[in-house]
Image (tube, rainbow over all chains, first blue to last red; front, side, top):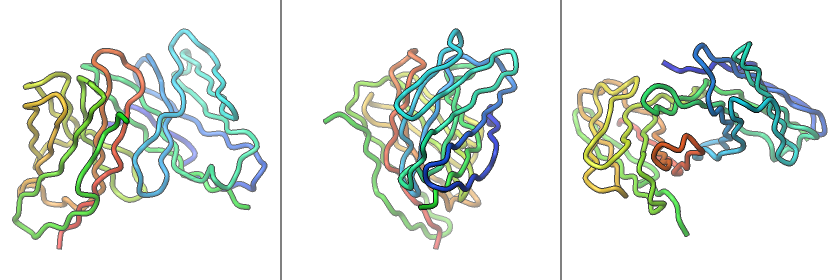
Length: 110
Length: 113
C-alpha cells in the first residue's frame, strides 16, 4: 500500500506561475522526500525534509512539512516549461521500505 | 562515474515466458529496490533488499522473484505467474540505514506480446 496521497493528481499552469503540490501521510512522517520524473525516465531526487524541520528551500523549490497534519507541500516558483514532469513524495516506512505517493502530473505551458 | 544501470531499456515477453531484468549499481549502496509503474500511476514496491543474501517482499511481490548474491546486483525475474506484467520497472538503491535519497536507474519497459 502506498503511504502517501498527493493532490492534485494533475496541474496545468502557465510559464512564470507558481505550482503547489501537496502530500499527506497516514503514518508518522520521518524523512520526507520529493522526487521528479520526466516522462519515461527514472526518478531524480529533489529535496529531503526531516521531521524536525518545517521548511526547506532549494533554488526555486520550497518544501514545507506539517507533522500535526501529516502533510507536506512542494512549491515551484516561477515555473518553466522544463518543469513539466511528474512529482512524487516518498517516505521510509517500517523495515526501511521506501514508499511513494501516487504523484502529481505538472504541465507548464509556454 | 557512479550510478545505477538497468538493462535492457525495452523488453518484449511472450506469454508464459520468464524474463529477467538487470539492475547494477557501483555506488557501494547496501539497499536496493524494485518498483513497478503503470501508465499515469505511482510506484509500487515489488521487492527490496537491505543486504546481500537477504530480501523482503514489497506490496506486489506475487509473480516476481529476486536474488541478491552480490552487493552490486539485484536482478528481477518476472515469472509466467505474473498475469499482467506489461509495465515500466524501476530499480533504486540507497545507503543502508541512512534514510536519505534514493538513486534510480532509467527503467525497463516490459511489454507482453
